[in-house]
Length: 637
Ligand code: NAP
Image 1 (cartoon, rainbow, N blue to C red):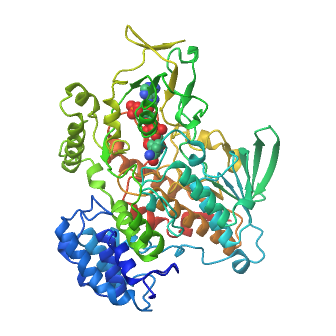
Image 2: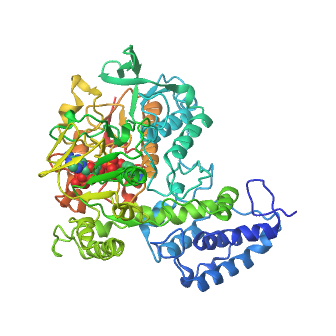
Image 3: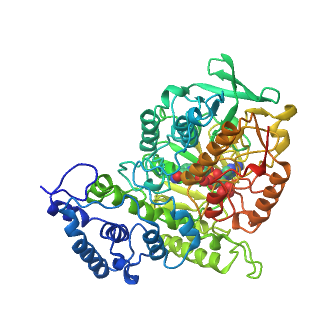
């Protein structure tokens, strides 16, 4: 038995390892080989992957075979020895890896790459201080509101820094959106290995994680990190009020049974999410319908759809997952589409990870780190040019720039191919707005196949009215037993229904009106020591990764807490002029992007057409601005 590349203690023979490596994706294998052997000659131009197919190389089979064979030849001596190598690539190698992967010099990618190579349990952004050592006399404490992806991370960072905290969660379990959304086939449309905290990797079964598995991952994360004992479940924060004299927030809470309590805390982290208040459309007669009306986020698992006539309203990311599952058993499904979604070809969307590769991902930490790196970095850099308006193009509701037009043609070809010679369907499924004006939905062909089923009908017009046993479509009555609403969420109503009263009792929702905004999505003038995670303008459409953005926010918040603690300050309050300049910048930058420009319906825009959801700049800009609190941006007292 040889000591092998395996860093997770399972020992395998060289032959067995060779067999597993045959399943490796070539881009990750090439980078792993350069790392382990120190031989960067494998970073050849002809073995560079296609950025669109990653983690697959997109190379032809002969080229792949040549790359694989050379990598194995170089790796072989290392497989049979106890040779040690650096856990993370040094800067010179990292630069070469990034240049090779991205296909040339890319300073945005180089900057982000500092935190992009993340073997399991390597956590470069763990706080480098603790309250005990930095400010032993400090009495700072914190409350985190919400136990989803954001709140758990905030909790961990506070725990690592030794700041006493509680996490208050209205549900009776962790997970946030992954607790609430349980509809059939609910899964993420972000690759599993980048839909995890960078420093806590996981053995995913599928390329795109299913809801129950993501929920399991988050629960395990909370348990493993001792967060469960900080949880107050089944309790909602209804109001928070700042007291400038004492430097404390007073939080009013209420349990589902109506029992109220008051909690005091110096720091509040609002991690309440964006997508948890269902948007129920005001359709005439909806309340007169006799059968069940179910929103995707409030699924009723008691309903049996077998042989039922079902109406689905909405064709967003949620409906595109549950409607195909329902159509398999229902007698008839009528789908009302207001706008057709753009679909991104994603063949492995519902596929399991093949065994050999899964073995590598579990057992070879550094393979997994490069596999992740190969998906993460290109995704972070993304394709912002394809979502940027070129005033000289000129932009229209078809496309907004040459790059956007190229993307439109590519995505149109995908839809046309699937529609085949069904002219009517083709007209219905090709969107009439530019790509990236709203979320592009991952698809493996299931959606159009569903629309082609004999028991499915796609209707591209609004519901006129609803009566007790169906839906009216002009003069036609469509009988229905069940109405399913895939109509999304009130994403722009940040922090509602919780009331937040800052300095002098100023109500946050009155301050905002309809236009929620926060500095870097995190802080607001007049609301000291109040931090948002996943706040306004922190989502991305073609140029980011949600979990990475959350890690940036947690990093910024914990640095602000450090500033408070080490300076002996009671409060940290954003300066008005800093906020005003930032807000102006975000409005101006948003207008340059497809989602800020297009007039199509989208949850990326609020009712007055302001983009309160999306981060409009490159991801690097967010990473750098959140890497450290600039104390000059704040009034410290
Ligand atoms: P959504 O994207 O907002 O889609 C809502 C759908 O309902 C749209 O088709 C919308 O049409 C339609 N609609 C809304 N109000 C309507 C009305 N009054 N009459 C007729 N149609 C109406 O909501 P979602 O599908 O729940 O997804 C929300 C977000 O959650 C996603 O964008 C994504 O970020 C996340 N999500 C992710 C996944 C995943 O990872 N796979 C799955 C589910 C959700 P218009 O397009 O014309 O507005």
